[in-house]
Length: 270
Image (cartoon, rainbow, N blue to C red; front, side, top):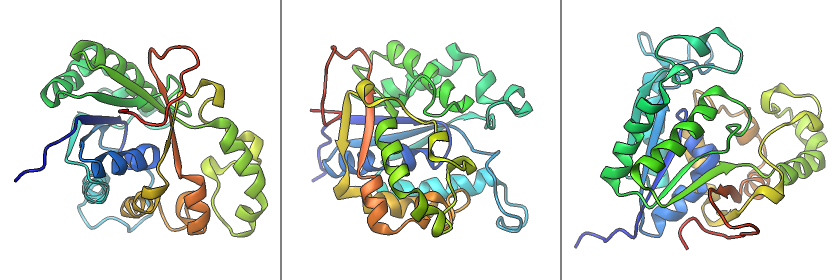
């Protein structure tokens, strides 16, 4: 007999690998609980950096990243992966931001209706997007926020969560482990040289929802390994010892849109 689903979670992300980095633990947790999880990716991640010779002759980065996200999705328990069909806009300030077809230049009304159609078809109970700065200011992440908010309103999706990072916890962790990271030759996020220069997420006071994903953090790491074109062995995520990874990524943080003042919760569904 087919297992009955207990609700549907739609996770909307900008590029392949974002789903694992930001929400891999929650995805695995909800899938294991019997919920249907649908991943919607805005772009193909065409502008990601990749080492010379990494791709096969004639293979595009978008093709490789689509294959990577399919393997990661299987590990995490994602039921369906769908692409909205926009091009990667690149990092903030690059000329590619404004190229026709980029997600950053997309008509928000049109893109919102594309996502809303998926939300309606899936009868989504919960949608995850990014906070209004996209976590760290990436144009495509900011656009995910804008499109996601409007799409949820169009589709009547009852719960919307903005995935973010706990800036206070991240800062504390980075300061405590900075010298160990540097001594181990671990590449710092964005190439920063000082832990105080890491600007990501929001203060803890703005976070409504902290989800313990420690039981699924090894699955999250295994899914990250599948995104080898972007997350190499020397990356910040994979170069740290496994125990440190478990500690650093055992919680995922969210802001529930429309939450009552002072709300503190530990699940996207309960």
